[in-house]
Length: 367
Image 1: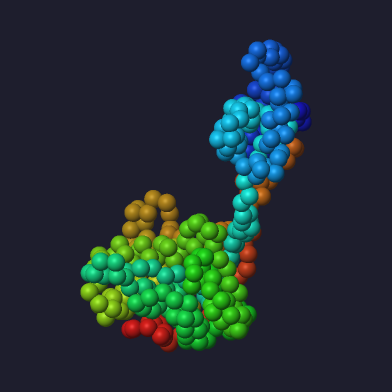
Image 2: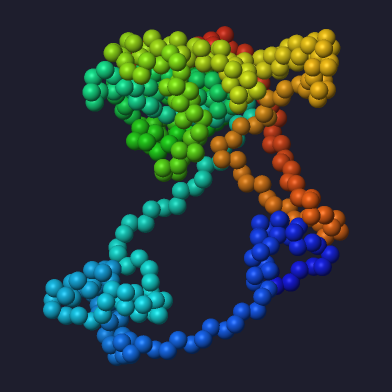
């Protein structure tokens, strides 16, 4: 920051640019020029440095790290320089980089999804369930609607395969009557999620697919949080004797989760209320109850009349970053004021037709 407009306080500029004021003051100070360093007596001569660089450029060592070069030359009865000296010579030639031949992985895009109504974005995953036998597991397939948090499909199986995932997704989509071109199915990069069978199925059903970045669990937060809710529930047994026990538990748990669980992410409504379009009615009823209590004892509400709870108009997986708006030069805010950035509401809340089937599906599996 070489110069600033005198009409804009430095604090406001630093806040808008996310720069520390101490860094600005430090850069403004004049620094004494560094004293030239004397060349050590043990330094290599220019001819010796050229010999080292020529060896590093040779076909034998062009893709090897300096440490390997030094020890390979020692095995051949030669010593040109230490490993650190080789790095120094490479740095002087601006050649310090990865020298080994390695595969370059493509950059993975950060998934950014938004749902303003049910059946717009589904998230699915597979989790293992422990059994009483060592090294034997059951596998629970779950699909969740991220807007309503409703589990729209689940299945318990003895293995995790692309064929089972294909059947599970196809039956769940058919059960809920999802129209082509209206749904995005998000998952991590597991073998079953990225399989050719699942990819072909989604293409046939005209469903867009989305994947998390490798080893980034935050890209699939809703299903991961759901698995923790399930495995930390008091009724979760920890281990199952047989698949019938797992199916019996899942049937009762998912029924409770969809119809009775008050979810904090959806204004403490049940997932079924939101998924089937009863959210506004439930929030209005809740507000009337609170207003009745306020009219009876207003002194117990020090902040005034209760406000009507609102459902979030949109649910995101990795919401887009909001731009930083610098303060206006004419406003000249004080030191205690900070710039505020408003978020634009993206889309309206659409309500689907109520569904008569409130219990989660268990297609192709044991239920």
